[in-house]
Image 1 (cartoon, rainbow, N blue to C red):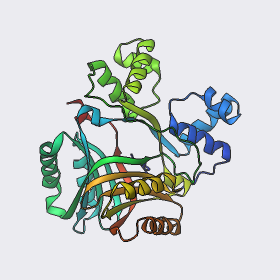
Image 2 (cartoon, rainbow, N blue to C red; image 1 turned 90 degrees about the vertical axis):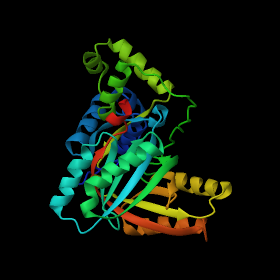
Image 3 (cartoon, rainbow, N blue to C red; image 1 turned 30 degrees about the horizontal axis):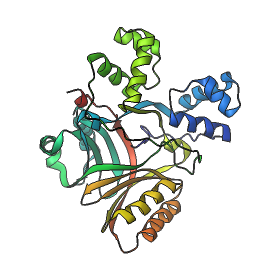
Image 4 (cartoon, rainbow, N blue to C red; image 1 turned 60 degrees about the horizontal axis):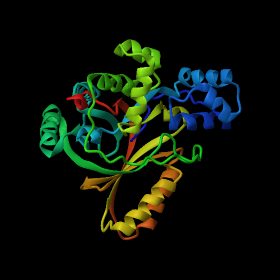
Length: 335
């Protein structure tokens, strides 16, 4: 899972250690209340509430999302990287608008580098994905030079902040075995609201669904226990913290169990890795690196090459420029 800035900002936000701890707690559960945070950071509840409000006013936090395991609905995750043929700004805007209209779209990210866009989509199997790919290519074919597809198979790392920001102990998420989930209309409506407003109050959700606040609390707890909801997270504007985000596609040969374990451990412990997944395709690893300087990026790539010598065949580095959409529960998941 990725957490990229929705919009760029010129303003930089300065944080003290208390701020970092507050944000780290939010990254583990964005629905945690101010009183609980206050006890953890040894501040008053009013002070914590003021700081939380300030993060949003300064554009550091740009909303809250609910992370949903779409595999429980029978969907697979695919990433399509598009290389356009010298597109104008007008053409890019036109394409972005078209991409945003697709109900299967999870994310639209603009890059600087070999590829111009990354599109994250969900599909029910290869046949469904083939149709989705045709829809996308039909839209951009007049401007398309090349494209790359990877299918996600396993998540190695998923963080809101890199370990260099605040090295906290993150509770591991255990994959819950399931033959599928059965949700009623109200569960789906609840997920739809929470998907893009993870901190919505029980009272607000009750009003929207016609249920009582207690019934809402019970349903959310049940969705968490069943693994449908993985967690609630803040949307961070990394530019406000002077971070740059790089997507790195890796092609690794001979990735046996031993090398995979070494690689997974490196990615989990590296201070700059934000998100990393195993893939199927020309590149079999996709990671997002969150750094302040290109030197930190270079060091991370050098370390990667050193832990898997002679097996890293190729890699591609892209600079994340702007995010135009990101949701963990697109409308397509309701079908």
